[in-house]
Every structure is written in structure tokens, then in C-alpha cells.
Amino acid sequence: QLVNLDAILLDPDRAPIPSEPSQLYATAVGLAGKANSTNFARIATYVTRMVTEADRGEFAVLCSRDAVRRDAKIIHSHAYIQLCSGPVGKLITGQAS
Image (cartoon, rainbow, N blue to C red; front, top):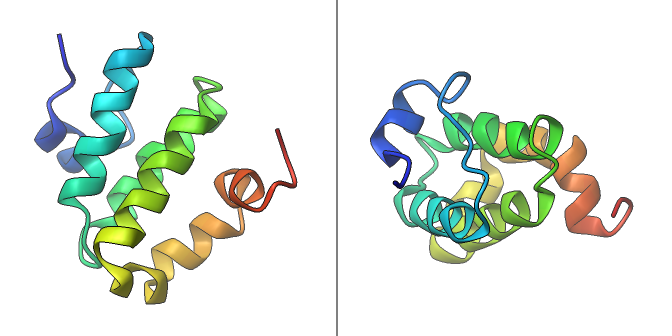
């Protein structure tokens, strides 16, 4: 029972966050594969929820880093800059664990 990635992109504020690590991994990698500078704000909203609501920051970091590796233009987006200044950014830079 994987989360529908398109449903996440449509409503990242209310889309469910999986509890199983394998489902979280698939969701993180799948979202990273769909990420671009146009939709990254929605992905950033969802991965921030992964940290704040589900305490699964490792998957938020995985998604964010994979998205940037796939499309380097994302780092120039306002959404990515905001993401890096919040809880996900603290995990990426090692300021939180």
C-alpha cells in the first residue's frame, strides 16, 4: 500500500505519511524522481511534515538530496532555500539528529 505520489503533489499538507520504512523509502525516492523546480515547493511541504509530524527526517533528507542530484536547478528555487532554513536543513547540515 504505497502512497500515491500524484496525490502528495496535489495536497502535500494532507497526504498521508507512511509508517513503514520500506514505504517511506519508496515515497522519498519516488518524489525525488518527480521533483523539479516547479513542483519542489509541494515536495518541500511534504518532507517537512516527514520531520515535524512523523519524526522520519532521514527520509526527508534522502528525498531532498536525491531531488537535487537529479535536477540541480532545484537549489536555486525559493522552496529549496526555505527548506534548508528549517528542520530538514538542520538535518542536512548535521545541526540536528
